[in-house]
Length: 306
Image 1 (spheres, helix red, strand yellow):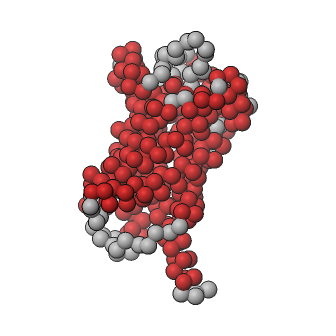
Image 2: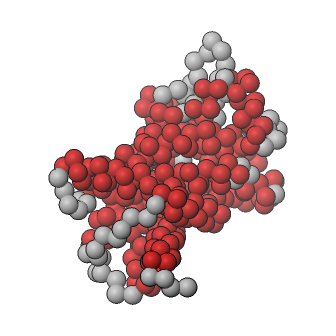
Image 3: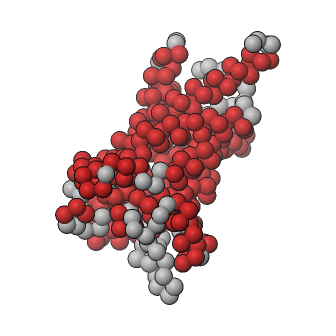
């Protein structure tokens, strides 16, 4: 195993996470729109509002609403990516050090990687909830006429439902991120241990793509039911005196399974895994590459190189 490199200051971690996150979202965002539309469909629907699957949803959105609709709501996730991805990787590093010290471990183990990832996911959740709520409401076709954009969603939500409504779905988001990050970082650790050590930069990139893609895929398998529930909770407008149908994560999981069948908990799984599987690889490769670039800059500066 390669020797542990000296840590970079938080600002560099923040920038690397931001660049990795924005790179991933620009490539993969249309799949997120399709995933959300399929998850929000509670019945069979009719005509343009009925989606039989991922490709059908893609075709109907482009044909009936235009290609640009596949990027509706992207402002919120782009603004979210810098703090979200910085929090993901920085928190993973910090929690990793905390747990190594707590359990007296010199290096990361499989179980510590899972625990560290879960803790990083919980930390990340508090950053992303308001952005996720805005994104979900902009992506839903039924909300297309209600909001003019990201700021309009925030203003109308706060005015009509209260400030705390911006954190609607926090519990479901916690479960979504705990499960995904535990699977993601746990698998990255294990896959890297199992793969032959890379001798070249290209080999390291290939290893990172494989490790990140496996991690993203396993994380997606684990967290899709909580993601379906989160989408429905955050898309529900709160009305004073009424208890929303979807309120808490696990009761909502049980309700959806009972009313729509277990398969409904994996609605949108194909576009989600196609995004977050390879997306996990993109994240890891870009983040690692940018951090390596920053380290080289630091080392060159320390040696007085131009």
